Image (tube, rainbow, N blue to C red; front, side, top):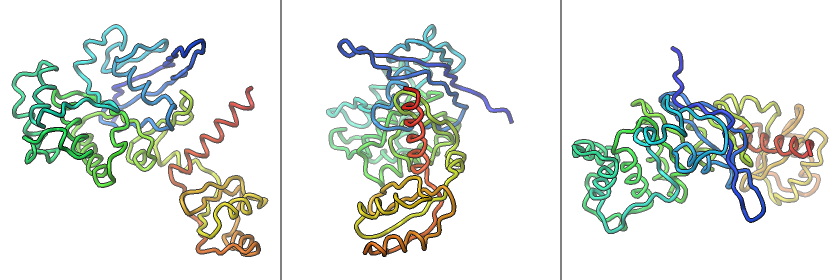
Length: 317
């Protein structure tokens, strides 16, 4: 079955002026999104995720490049595009003095929807908000506010939705529920483009684009990205993490050591047995709790891609 591209971006460019300085927020970004795909934009703060989404939602114009969305030109046909998309921004504006039901009514009327009561009740049930529909938005938890915001985004039945870091600041249980909702929507045929700083959320996407300093440094499936990490990975749990990181980093076959909480992830260029790491640490009076080989996570792969991209940029200067 041939994949259908619903969004095509070629050499997207956006710059901003900050005083006398020109800042390139989006730099020659190119990717496409298929119908009924969950596509993730992943990267640290300032990577260009929000700017890219705001351009695709016609909030701000691009400075260059070509974007085709739902077979429409982003610049010339932006009014038509706005009717067909949903946008949940980082600071989605709910009205605290309105109830859940009244907020949905308000956004339905903004989109010019008239006979929407059945759709509203369907969304309330799906979001598990039907029992609370008369509660004021100001009295909702963070997770419930995001569900309401998503319901408002979906009331006009968009073909594609753009979500800008929708789970930032939301508790883990609400994050899980939110992603269950997104997964269900995707299975029903909705296309989802989502930005996130969380690598565990990126694992849930069909494909992800790693962004850094306005550029895509890798775009692929999470599985392929992790499989491309050629080095062996060893996880170390021990005392004196900082000292242990320095000791391990000095071993001949080690290319990188990253701290993950109270553990270290050790990248090795060739086979390095856990016993060798244990011996190096115990020889320096470091207590070792556990050392074992692991499969790389998307976070491991992202850190390596980011390091390679940074090295490449420095070499070009």
